[in-house]
Length: 307
Image 1 (cartoon, rainbow, N blue to C red):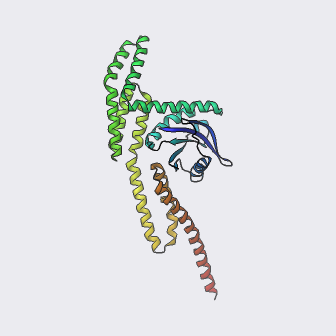
Image 2: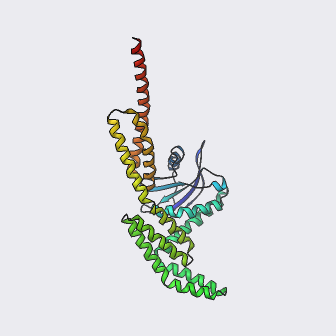
């Protein structure tokens, strides 16, 4: 589970500025250097999401879709536990984002309360998914309220559903996680979406939304992996052309490299990100040198013609 949520903006002139922050652990604090690094990744490299690991601590940041409140520079960052499932966190993000936009204000104290509620919501969902009994207890509380309100038929239906669906829901989620771990992403998606349907039946709308988001996110993995493999093949092809001294090819390296950086960030493949960033920097330098060499070649030919 996340240890902290930080809401911040990136000002083009002044850099990152924290709008609100909420920490579960005493002494936790997101370093200024990490926010500056995120600012670099989001601002100059135009990444929607980014991950950073420092001293065995993981940080994740993503741009908030805040067009409805006419904001284009707001980001949310998380401090993560080392074993945090980033796919789950991204699935929570949609719900947290909606709450932030709905309650957005310049009042730092009020925004901190919004972050606190968002964190509690995440923790509540995690606990419910781990233990079916918590869902059953929630259903019991809901049915008692229905009975008090005179909704006896609805209460009986929910009681009957509450006897079997929480166990089925937990079983479906466990199966989905199993297939995800095995790399069977289509099967995992199917199970997550089935679990989302079950959660909706027992009126666990927040759980249903989370599972649906997670299923749809996992379902994109086969296409993303295929795209990644194709990009690496494209780089390999360009490398062969470079070996033939066709220097213009450096210009065609940047697009696939930048796409691979985005994909590696999404999958938290830190080693690939570092290598790809060095490759991007070297390619940009090679492009500049190739242009300079082309200019010198042209000038030399002109001078030779004058002799």
